[in-house]
Image (cartoon, rainbow, N blue to C red; front, side):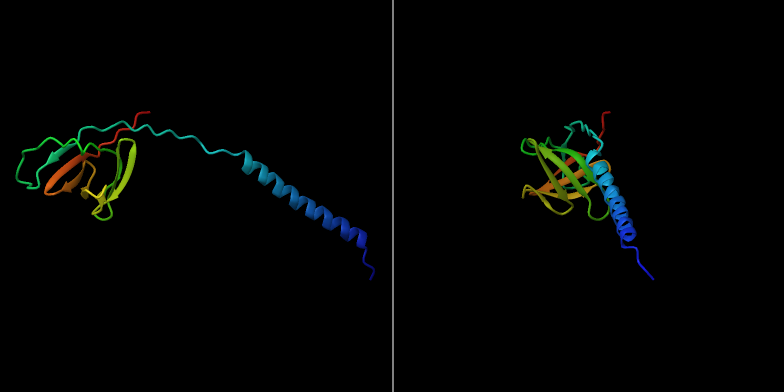
Length: 133
């Protein structure tokens, strides 16, 4: 049995050329593809207000000038709820039970409000987020 080495050589070169061409085409397609630009326009929420620690009281105080955060996102639930707030172009992600700027503790988050406490005072921020398209 005589092996035709020239034919084997040409077959291997053709196979390697086809594989190389496949990878070059894939590389070109990956380099030319671009992700879609999605713009998220969040409107500012400035209707934050303070609520009393005692749920039986309906007297609400105005929010102190130092607590002027706005909610830009949230995840509500029984466990591991979190809220994304913004103040002076700084964004903070706070999970339930954690402190915001080592001052305000996030007590609870639901689809309507996020409640923070500090030294016996409670503050609520509306979580009603509207997206303008």
